[in-house]
Amino acid sequence: MLPVKASVKLPKLDLKHFDGDVSEWNSFWELYKVSAHQCTDFEKIQKFSYLKGLLEDEALELISGFKLEGDKYLQAVNLLKETYGRKDESKLCLVRKFFQTETPKADAESLQGFRAQFECCIRSLKSEQLEVSELYTILLYTKLPSSVGRLV
Image (tube, rainbow, N blue to C red; front, side, top):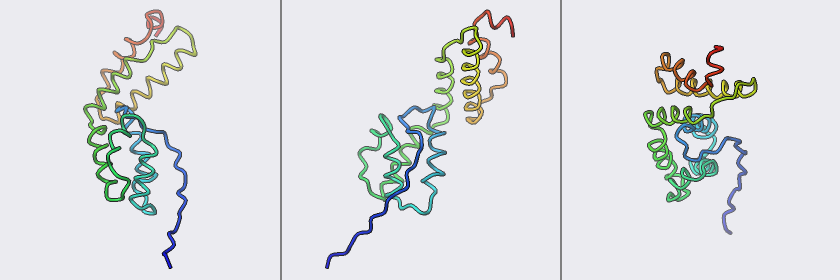
């Protein structure tokens, strides 16, 4: 008689996908780490399956050469960390991302949206341990329209 393989249905992980945007790596990895990577209930092959299911575009392409095997999981994780987890590159991407944000219009909705983006950028830069105390004011004033800057 042939052995019967047990079929286990994995719980759904509802995490944001990662496409290779370096500025998004730390938040993706922190969520994935606590949701699956550190979970002792999952085998490595299950973690690898989850990870592959959460990657897109460049990030998925990066690890596509690894077979879906448990012993390849940590190799894939290490490659992702080496590629996207570099602190200097992450900081640079965060600053670039900020400078690519649109200058707000002089209306409440646009200014509120800009403020939310600005605060998010500052929190991200702080988490990267970039000293932003002096940079904060300079960045804010360079992004505000001149008519709003005079009101502040």
